[in-house]
Image 1 (cartoon, rainbow, N blue to C red):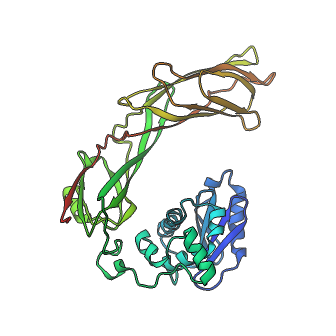
Image 2: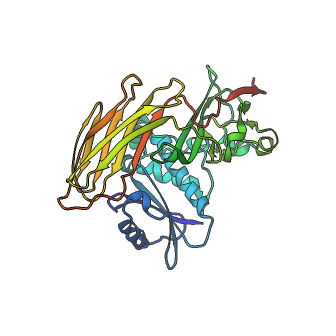
Image 3: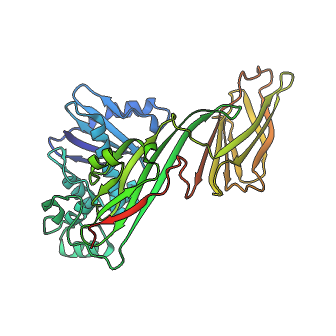
Length: 398
């Protein structure tokens, strides 16, 4: 399936390559570089690029392109999911996935890639199994390997590979048994100038950190599971029980893993937790305009809104902006016409605002329409979809 993997930085340099079958020349990446030049941003590079003899499938994460080369048609999402697994594995092994870290641990990287793919087909993608096969790098282990000439490859076959639960190793023991589940949701919404929601959808995941002794059999239920749509599960979840009872039943892997990802469509009522009041006007007789926006909380259930960033693409006729924020900092790029306002945390008692004037080109016509305003924010311990915190139960757990 996958013949080769190339790691390319944002500058277009190939800093690592791995081949599982025949060696594919680096020249195949020229088609990728052409698509990269046509794209305005790195995220806009097409994930699937056909060439005369190959297909290039790529993902862009941590300022690195992971480009897989295949020679026959395969389900593209299958390859893309594998590439995401590669990135997650590197992050789990090294703490951060970046070009310098990968170069510093290039031997471990090649060993992990060799185990993750067998003759071009995914083999071991679970972190538990890989860490038994290839020991994670440590300072002490690196020094010992340098002196003795040994490697991080384990001496024994992973115990999980010999059982019906390949994602969990046997003989797990903990002094303090604990399990944590984090619900992380991202909302993508379009709101018109009157404040009405045109469309809104939510992408969510449930990440778990399970440190339990033995072979626990767990169940996880929600107060309103019908909200979840287009659900993707970890292989440990018993799908038939979810279909019949809407209950998650599973034997978890040891440590950190993603239990499921889900989607909440716009058909459900999605409450937007913030609002933006704006007054943007351009005068016909002068080359000046008025710009004023205010951000405030709405339906946050007492939670604090933080990490607020407001951006706006201004019309081409705008020369400069003279603005004064009540809190945070702002920048305006006269070349790209991009306004950015880093608000930070919203204080409900004193709402942040950005006010000032807009300078237009002399003799330029009044812009036909107002610019769009993009708002990014974070709210801790609040599920926008209304998905209540999970109810946890244990079964057959000594």
